[in-house]
Length: 286
Image 1 (cartoon, rainbow, N blue to C red):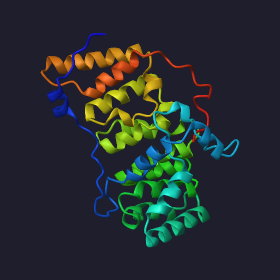
Image 2 (cartoon, rainbow, N blue to C red):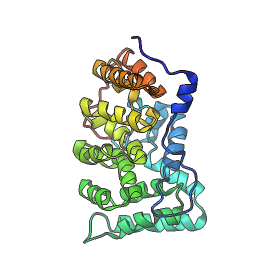
Image 3 (cartoon, one colour):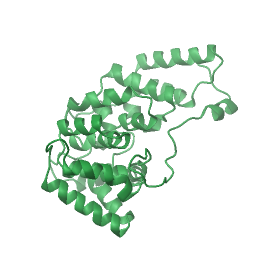
């Protein structure tokens, strides 16, 4: 397919991404807590799919579908191990207490559960760099179901909403949490969008909605590297190719540069579709 290519200078000028999540001052409302999840992603990606399968107990609901994802989602054990190694003693003590507390009082209790208070404290207690991972572990310890996750998502801060999105592959085994994903995809908050295009979305979002999610990433500058399972879902997708071509043509006609990520995704649509995954699309996740 012939398509407009941006010049190197234009591509550099147009490079836009989700903020690089520098370590900010500790604040419960910081929107930069994704370090651990991204860092652990990379370390997990270095393991083979066989190793990951061997580490999971047979029938474990959190066994990963590693072959489906662009980059493996860190397991809950990975997150706990990472925090144990990187938190200072005071933060580790606080997290251990918060997890024990959540496990002792799971689910929703009254206007606000004690573990929901700990979600709000995580940024201050663990630091912005580790807050998302800590919140995901607290949600797991509290055995948060769809009702609890929905309450946290719609009543919490942007940080807490992002943590809910990161937790979905671990805590929700079917498409019941898609309304949370759909809400996040309607925002222009790039950190929420980045969390919303993870493995849960790759497994459950309809083709039509998923294509629009990819375009939303291009509109807002979220790197397509954040889109889980992109190569498999984009492969041979002629409708996505058409939408990308239209978007590129519109930008070119307006004298605007075409994002380099658009060409990357367009190339994927021209690749051979991989063999279908045998797992049921609404089966259990990580």
